[in-house]
Image 1 (tube, rainbow, N blue to C red):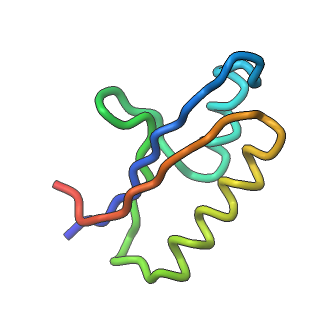
Image 2: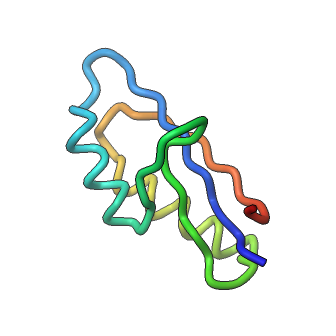
Image 3: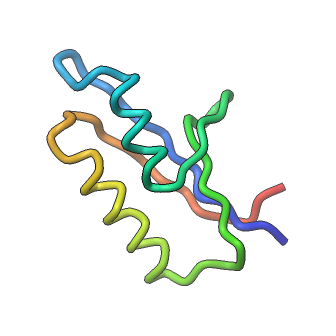
Length: 78
């Protein structure tokens, strides 16, 4: 059983360059992917609510000032 957090990002005109934002997201532990989601974070075990919130907090800090909005979705992966 693999648990994953999917990340979708929304850029607006005037936000930081996508290539710079990707580096920040990857520094939090997300891997770039192609398809309906932009990034995936793979958990070693089923995460707790606190762990998911901590990951979201890290992501928020990494993206602070970029003008990028995001959505995360955590569930059991394929």
